[in-house]
Image: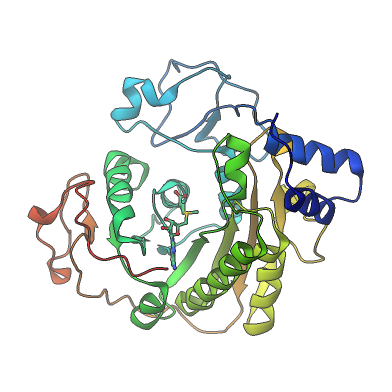
Length: 356
Ligand SMILES: C[S@@+](CC[C@H](N)C(=O)[O-])C[C@H]1O[C@@H](n2cnc3c(N)ncnc32)[C@H](O)[C@@H]1O
């Protein structure tokens, strides 16, 4: 069993008062055990599900299943056919505040690759009337665009045929300039110190170091500040991470509310049992010792500014950007001008990453 570092022990003491809880948290990271695989069905489930299912939790959407340990959904032919997307159950937890929103015409995912939250949002809001007009999935890091496009293309049927799916490769500051107040729902699944990778048995060197945590917290604040500009009056902003450190979670939420007082945090009643005990605000945590998923933080904000959403005027698209049309590649609307011939997946030539 690898020994817990001093920094991990310190974090466990910051997170939990009880020594038993501290030990459970540390053990989940130093002696990782597999989590139940989880899938998001992109359309109605088949009559006969080729997996053994786990019991559901009360807030689990009907388009998500947790599978028995040992199931290998990625190897099932239905995976390549786009019938489902594999994700960590923590991602379902983090995205689940969206389940209390009734509809969204424009959804903008600021940190989208490889696409799990975009697909969750697309699937949920496509079940609503009217279906979304646009799902815009942005990924700032150029080399990660290929995976995003590949997944959105494979799982396109998760999203209503009438919804235009657009992928972009822009820094959040550029999005803020180009698309102010245009989105009903903005997702920020922020890059973070990667601490929960340890719970999956993946190395994450330096993830508890204060320098790494501060660097990530500053980047998260910068992304959130830009994302705030994108949210339409009365629209919603969902902030998520898969880190445990309060500096990247509650403290970022607190900073955001102090800088953007027009936003208010919203309670998510179905997650009440997961309320973070490190904040008086409504914000929620899943810890790896719950054995449901590797861990996540989630906080939902609403823009209380009166007014209406601004009309979308999409930017001229660059290399590796464009639309995932109605079940085929290419852009539905000629005015955004991307030829379908430019598409390709994972070719490593997807524009220049502008993020940090
Ligand atoms: C936690 S991952 C997103 C996972 C994704 N939402 C999903 O559910 O599949 C964070 C993403 O933010 C991107 N990123 C890194 N630096 C960024 C920056 N400065 N601005 C915006 N996004 C950034 C990363 O490339 C990564 O794809």
